[in-house]
Image (tube, rainbow, N blue to C red):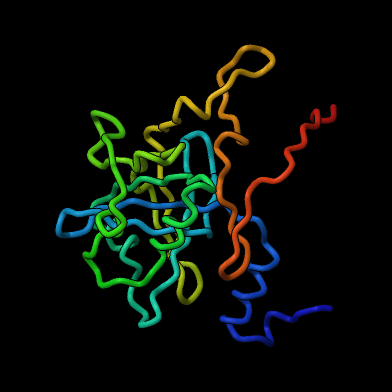
Length: 204
């Protein structure tokens, strides 16, 4: 089968892309609403971009009415946000936070999710139960195509729960992916865990 993306509508392109580009990591983003409470939403057009400076990228589509997503509005307005890497144990809460709600309603409050300070010099909290959290500052934003906006965030702090840390063969502290048990995004309504982890040496 060959699909000519020039001959199909954008919604169908989205369906095929999200079935083919799998699994995708999920950025579970906490940001501050205009009222001062916290918005929380998952995004799977997300990945690492650079390490010097440390940058990650999240691509935001518009709402069905053409308006910006609440998270994008908050990041543009306040510059700071927190990207959580959720575990499979949090999949229900993550999925629930994707529901469309009026601006200003807090998914954190509605689901009674506990938060805790991330760092004394960073204003936003993190979700207490998430194993990993990246405190970010808006670095750059760029329109993409007709409906997307790429937000590039600079990572200021990384929080890693002690329970997901381990030591490698050289005694260096590392994040154990199996202990994180991160959520992977597949097509509509489908998620996946890690499955088997395979280690291979890099060829010379």
